[in-house]
Length: 344
Image (cartoon, rainbow, N blue to C red; front, side, top):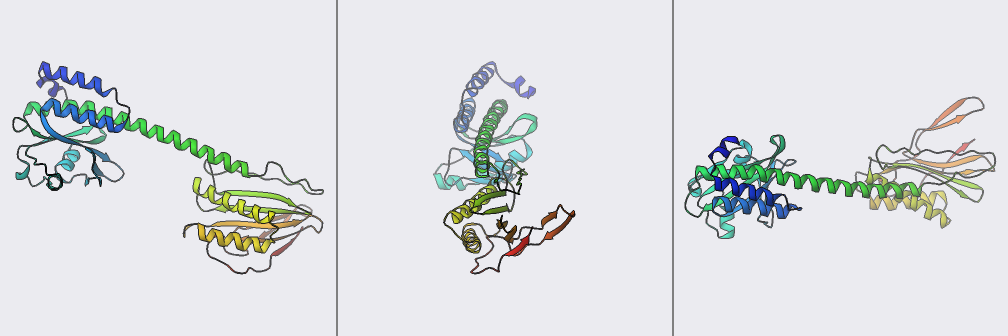
C-alpha cells in the first residue's frame, strides 16, 4: 500500500482524499456500491465498470452493481474477476478478447464491447475478502501502472467502507430478528398457565426452561368440571419453528376442550390437522390425559412422549410409563386404542 501511495501524484492523492470523504456518507449498501465504482471510474478515466461482492457462504462472487436480473454469479477463482479475488492481485488486461479468462457473455447480453479491463481486489480488515472492482475501457487506451496504483488505493478505502455498511446491515438485521424472537417468546410464555389448578388433595407444579430463547416444549393444565386436563409436549428441534408448532398444538387442544371434545376425538383431530400442516420431517410428541379428581385416576394417551415417571411417595417406588402410540403429526389416523388408565 505504501509503495502505491509513493507512486501517486499530488493530484491523485487529493482525489483519493476527496473520495474517502464521500465514502463516509452513504448509509445503505447500494449507494455505497455506486460511490465506490464512480470513484474508480473517475480516478482512472474508465468508461464503465462493475462491482462484485464476495459471498463467503457460497464461495462465489455476485455482480451487485450495476444490478442485473437474474443476479450474475461466478465461482471464486473462475474467470478474471474470480482469479483477481483468489489471488488478491490486480489484473490488468489491455485486450479482453485476447485473454481466455474473459467471459464475453455479459457483452453479448448488453451489447457493450469490452476492450480493456482493470480488475482490483477489495480486501477489508484483517485481509478479509470483500469483493472485486472491475473498471472497463479506459478512454485514452489500456490502463497504465499509474491507474493500477490509484485503483489499489481507492479499493482499499472502498473495501473498508463496504465492509462497514455490510457489518451495519448485519447488525441491524440481527437486532430486528432478536426483537421478533423476543415477541415470539412473549407469545409462547403467555400461552402457558399463569396459575396452577386449585384442587383439594392435589398440588400441581410445572417448569419451562427452553434450550434456546424459544423452544418446542410445552405444558398445559386446564380444569374441566371435576377433571384436570394435562398436556405435555415437545416439538422436534429447537428455536422459533418448534415453538410455533408447540403453541399451535396447545391451542388446538384448548379449542377442542372448549367444544366439549372427548380425549380420543381431540387426539385424532389435532393429530390429523398437524399431519397436514407440518413438513414431512417434523412432528411432536405429547402426553395428554384427564385427571379424575374424585376417582384419583388418569386416563391418557402418550403419543411418542416418554418414558413418563410415576412416583409413589408413600412407598418411594416408581413406574416408567412407555409411549402408547407414535408421535403427533406423523400420519393421519382414523381410530386410536382405548386410553391407558393410571391409578394414583
